[in-house]
Image (cartoon, rainbow, N blue to C red; front, side, top):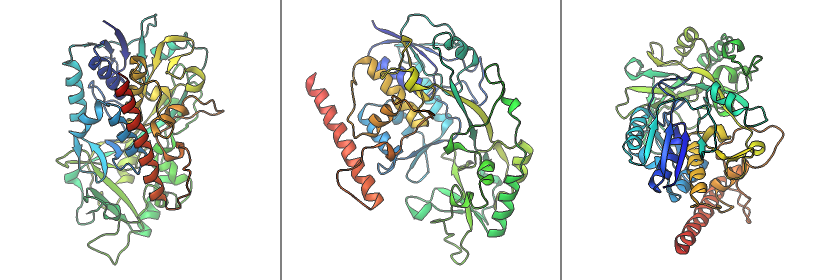
Length: 439
């Protein structure tokens, strides 16, 4: 019987393990948690979502929605589990992260073809191995990997948003509404007047930042903070200009108070439910690296959060990834050691859904179920991105900018994305039919 070793039971590793196990392969799945902790994980459960509980939009007219639709056609294992753990979030797929992790863990541990090994993996040999260790790959494994590849790895910093208790919020100020009333009103909204916004933005600008030395390790003795743009701390955004926040994560457009139409908010911070019971909420877009004391003081300036009880404070941690175009072959194997494959965020994709896709893709490339993907699919273009050498390689998530241009010109952005999605899914369906017919 064929056998594979998978290192890391995060999203990519869990997806890959289930792909191989369902195909009849024996899987040795290594995970160091909870024996060896990371700066961001809270448990030892598999497929734990760290930064947010959202897998983004389900609409195929969004890049994340289209990628998820393509992944379902390709036989994704984790998305059906995620859908059973969903919490109210309009058109997005947000989940109860604790229930999801426990379900994935139970599913994997109960699978007869998967052998779980709760140890830190550091020794490379000639066995078929998939590294799905994620952005929080341990220093010991990175050191072992540097004996294999003659290239320095890259890094950036990622911030996490705080979570507050629902019963500590002021519902006389906060109102429920989804932007432009699209879908169910699943988000809570904290409206700012101009004066409130300016005070809040100024407080963020003056907040104390952590010193780089707090994140030093034996690989990075001189650290410069480099953020992944989608997870830039809210206080860093405030430094870019007084209006940056209200034109970005705090934009008020489409979020007018239905109970007070005469008072249009100058800016809005949204809260998204962490669970079905709605006992806790995530501060959407409010990733932060402020000191805990300052978080409590400054974030309580948000209207409706004056007495907020913080169940989790925001934090920042170093994320690692490889220079994929330089180090990896097209099938995600290392150029200098072809029995070792890399999946997930460590390979250079960014985001929860993209990590699951990476695990799915690598597993099926090895299994021979996928040899190529249609050019006009977002999954193909994300795969291609990791193969093109560029001066400053940065992790990439799914976006419509990756797709080839349409042969016809469509000015309306929504119609254009709809057309791109239709072409993508039709091409992938036809490919699946051809694969099925050829067997």
